[in-house]
Length: 354
Image 1 (cartoon, rainbow, N blue to C red):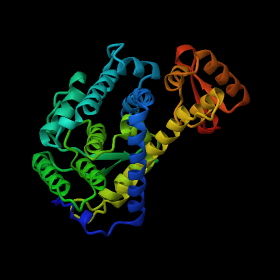
Image 2: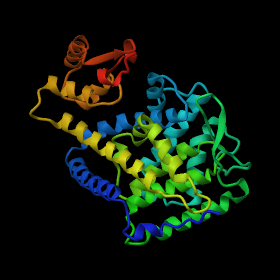
Image 3: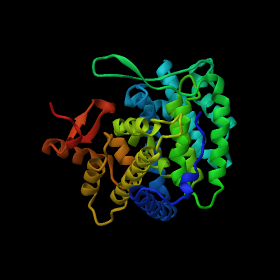
Image 4: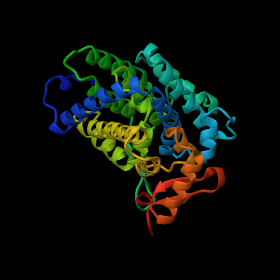
């Protein structure tokens, strides 16, 4: 049986790449905190966009999708969910909002984890909403020939509650150790949660919500302004590869957390880097309005709409935004996707050419 023990984080024998990433992220975080205090309007607008992208990204990883227009309507509360997928999306929205607004009052515990699962799944009508799995489950993958195979066998249902209790206690012990870097502790806990796989469904989405919560508790709130979930979705092959590598030998305590830690930190670094670019674009006083519009589109890895650009660049008129976007489409630097109100624009280099 796996023994939950994070004491290796206290021995100082960490890979240089992980140490360097941690230092860089801490520096980014300090800069962001200063900027946030002095630029509340900008950060409020970035938060609105990230909220939609987080709901979309985390559900997309699990194959739960709908149109961008419907995502926005559901997240903004302008429309009730119409089917099961949309109820799943609305559930994630509710859980995400509670973490964003109430993380200071939350403590990492079994009751909280069960509550997050219930909040996320109850609207979709799950029989085991807010309850641990009652049957053993498997983590499977499909190979190139279409054949299914077991990638990992999680903790049996009968042992799940005990495993979760041990996970929480190990986290608390490491959290209270002043020699343990709290940022490095988070991916270790998330990996163990995924290896336990305590729920019949929703484990991946809950793990991302817990990641955000623990980041908040450790003083890192970038996920509120740039979607952590969307960054995972953009590189999900790397994410799953790291998860597979770090879970190998988990039952016999022979696994290494380092690959998953590196993936987690790299994703977080991307969030801060993206936040830095977006802030610089929005706040770039030396740039003309045209240049700021261009950089907003070109620096975004996701398609953006005219309204989203207007939300970020509040001093630029919609007419100016539309004019610049039209010129960019003509020059081929961006590609126009969709029609009418669903129209979005994306950097041409992100569109795969046949």
